[in-house]
Length: 177
Image (cartoon, rainbow, N blue to C red; front, side):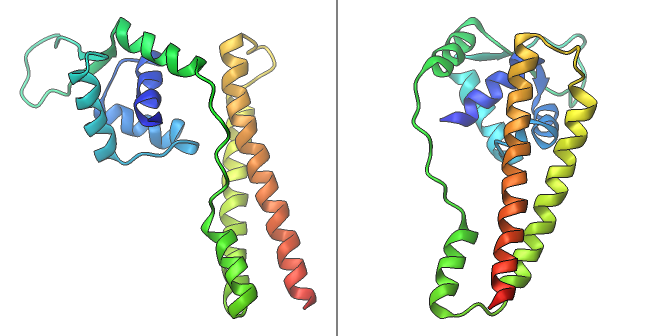
C-alpha cells in the first residue's frame, strides 16, 4: 500500500514524468522505499485511473513527449488520510540474519566473507547518507518539513551505523572462534 503514497508524496513535492520519478526514487525516496521503474509506471496508471493524479496538459504538442503528472485534491486527501493512520512497526526480515541462524546449524563456511561484503556496503551507504546530511541540512534549514525530512535521513544514518557496528562485532566474535 505504501508505493502509491510514496509516489503521491514525490508528485506533491514536484509534478514529474515517470522517468523523472524513477530518477528521484533512485536518488532520495529509494534509499528507504525502493521500487522498480515498472512498478512506478504501473502505479502511475492506477493512480490516474483512480482519480488521484492527472496528466498535465502539454505545453506544445510534440512526438514522444513525456507525460507529466500532478496530484489532484483527492490524491492529497488520500495521502493525508494515510499519513494520519496509525500503523504498527514491521518486524525485521533480513535474509542475512536468517543465514547466520542457519550457519549456527550447518557451519559458517563463507559467512564471514559475506559479512565483510555487507560491512563494506553498509559503510558506503552510511558515507552517502552523511554526505547528504552535510550537503542538504545546514543548521539554518529548520522548518517543520525540513526537520521531518532530516528525521528520515537520520533514521537511515542510525540504521547504517547500527549495521556497521553489529557486523564488526559479529565478525570479531567469529574470529574468536
